[in-house]
Image 1 (tube, rainbow, N blue to C red):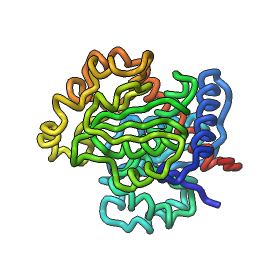
Image 2 (cartoon, rainbow, N blue to C red):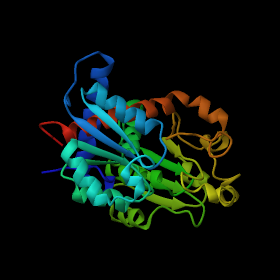
Image 3 (tube, rainbow, N blue to C red):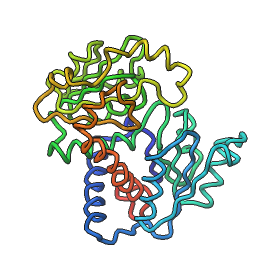
Image 4 (cartoon, helix red, strand yellow):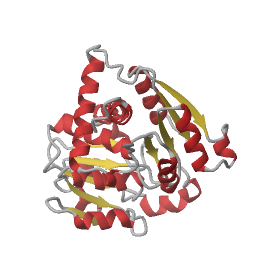
Length: 309
């Protein structure tokens, strides 16, 4: 049966932990020079309708390290950008390749691609969800804190795709999650509805970043205006500036040893100060590196011969 990674809402706690355990093994193998070319002869089609640094480099490098090959397809330079129906793209690529990764705007486009493809589809980012990033985030937190369950995660900023996936991923693995964002910039209603159903973990949505950060073990933030929202930058700055920033005063409210995570790129002086960013740079760039290992785990579990996920 074909498997996809479209959003973390589709995964169980056991699924997420299985991916993280596999990612740990992938990282160990790569660091120790152990052969792990599990996808030899396999090809991943990578569709990019949004710009990328980390997603493209990590997926392409990951396929190479697994013995496979990745094809870059730009939305501007392929038939996708000229209006070819998603269902036709899905069926054509299914005849050529062994998996598809797509980075685009609409979650509905990813879901439609998966409906018509006969090969695994991976969501590299949409306006609704960023599952691959949050798998790397959870991997990084577990590496440094030795656990996930019982920790408190907080997010300061816009209720965007990152916070949507962080809420789902964090709650599913047993973390408490607190989110602070301005009124009118809340996470997606489907995610908030999911959060109400969770037992054993606490969730809160507040307006005061200090309330969200109190007693936190890891603080997350992201830019105030994501890709596609450049026209709203001035309005968003007015809503966020001076309040929704990770700074020394906010970090003083967190637990001792609290981590900081940022999916990058970071706008120093806006959502995070340069001082806090540099104080936690090792953690942030571990997070960036772990995109490679977490995505290799996803690729292996979805595209490998055994498909044990």
